[in-house]
Length: 202
Image (cartoon, rainbow, N blue to C red):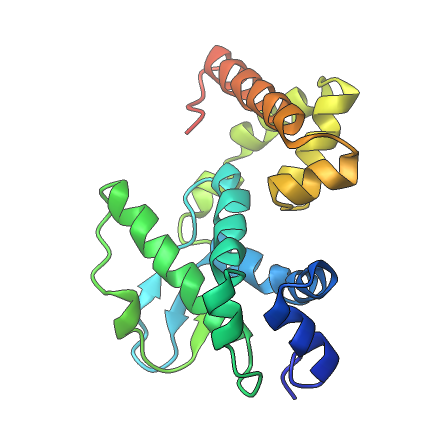
């Protein structure tokens, strides 16, 4: 039985925009959205592929945008509670992935609306060399190991845990402006570190 359908009180709170209900729904589905963002997806009927994000640091923003759109009032009130909620989130992620790839000049030969049949999460990254290139991973880990405690905490929540800025700030006891400042410092430092070691940051 679909998660929201199994709990009418939760469904009512979700439609109303209750913070606790939204958090429960977020944690129930975020892992699947993260997998879509990282590994991409394909149509079970046509075999059409939509690659995941090209770089790991793009993943938290994609996840945040999926839920930001899904949690708008019209979207919440339009959900009937009968169908499973996951396919809706997957299609949102598909739309956003297609838009992102096209903005970067990458050819995607299908519109998200043309994806027919069940959308299946891929089992391997579309471009594994961007995720698993050994020297890039090694240098990123070296940079993280040398970060201050506050930057490492932001890294863990945002880029390992995949939390939105709002949720990460709340968990760390920070204001969102403070979190954004630390995140910007983290990213700038990592980019500089990678350039010094002859690696492209993007």
